[in-house]
Length: 121
Length: 247
Length: 141
Image 1 (cartoon, rainbow over the protein chains, first blue to last red):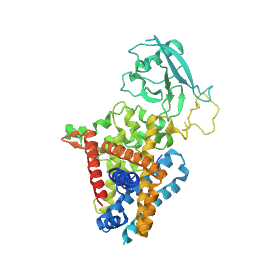
Image 2 (image 1 turned 90 degrees about the vertical axis):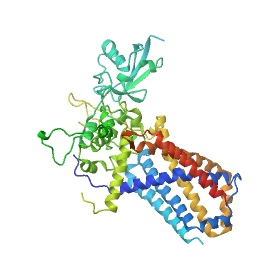
Image 3 (image 1 turned 180 degrees about the horizontal axis):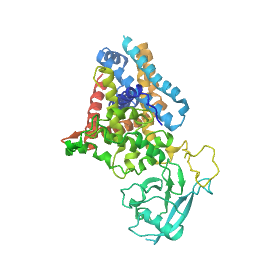
Image 4 (image 1 turned 120 degrees about the horizontal axis):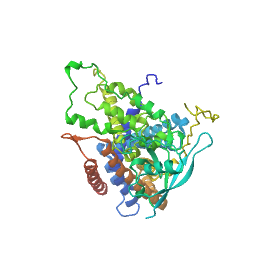
């Protein structure tokens, strides 16, 4: 019944990005979110001032770290959200639109993060 | 304990019914009885028209898979005592068309198993005079777990992806493909790759993990699928980064 | 012998199979499916964190005034509440991720398969150590 199936080229890459993003998100995001979003605003820890934050960003390694922290988890989320919409809401006929929006969003976020980190003075 | 227990069994007669409905039966409660014993009692003594599959009654043939209180189980391995005194609801396996009562159509499942080329593929067969293909215990261990599948389809009943997408190859089929891919005697990984690396095969799986949880033989199809995803992804990466590699 | 979309009349040799439609709320029908969907939804909160970080970078690029406005935004009680929920989901992602990745790997040592908890255990420990190190680095400023 099946003709020779077409070789999938993009799925392995998307899955690798998803996995890498999952690892980065699992190890790094909890502590970052705890400090940035909860401990800092509640005053449990000293919120980073502009001057010291800028000093942090002067290190290229920090910029690279932040780029990875922003970019890979976005692809992880895009992949999972795409499959959740596909399976959860059973809107298969919108498959290409969903994929474009999800991965497109991840690409946009990556580009914005890269631009901001590259150009920060 | 009470000496009877109530079974609510799904009945569907295509001649007369538009949809399945539950019918209640009181069966004797014996400590050592399983759900299959109760079904046999109903068919023997109360309603001979009850239709269901069973065979070995010892958890090896894979015939008696049904939903017991919504959970995919082998009815020959599910004790009444674990549910008494509450009533037990017995329904046909989820995600399959119902032919009658508790019997489902397995054509799709059989077709998907065959699609995986579940046989040893060799570039060249050894002549019989040269003897058997030898295998060390370690080589056997590499795939033995995936060879334990009894084709009971409980994993398909548990898999939400299969329910949502009937084209999905499913846990047992992909685990079966891995059973052959990991067999040291097999040389057919490349032949199975185009079948496996598809939207409706490994890439459709979202690692819900229900298949592994319900498997009565501890095959761990979810693990097999994720491991193959990694294999396929690394193969792809190698083909992109080092395209000069000989096939 | 597929059942047609329009139910055919019953004939002796072609019984009408019953196909149940999968409900849009299939994921509410069993605890296991709900836990799965919650795990997947944690990715939305992962994305939210990245949005926050990008917003922080953008605010910094506009100068200290904009940055302080961003810090005030973070102090909004609704935002704090949402971030607490996000934190719980993000932690849920980490826990489920380490357990999943242990099951996805088949590591054999001396012919025997390494049990899952020996793979996820070190991951959890590494998670705690890395978090402590990063926390210390972030708060040093």
